[in-house]
Length: 68
Image 1 (cartoon, rainbow, N blue to C red):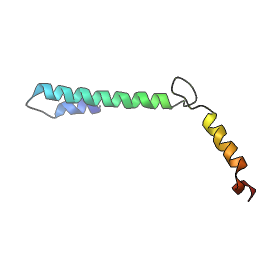
Image 2: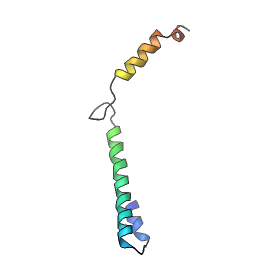
Image 3: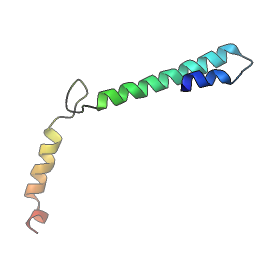
Image 4: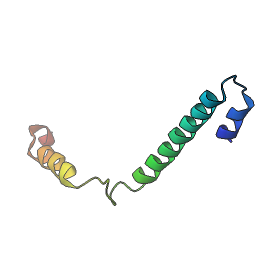
């Protein structure tokens, strides 16, 4: 709908208008692709491993503030 709406704005240069619409479509598709990748952060090629969580847990258990 957003990409179709851009055709309502007339421009003198058709090539510039086509490039702008293509760039908008590319940005929207990349955003949707990123949302799809990050929907399941613990699986796939882009994933969050347990190492960071284990390090924080170890530091919290060895901290003197945990004795309060």
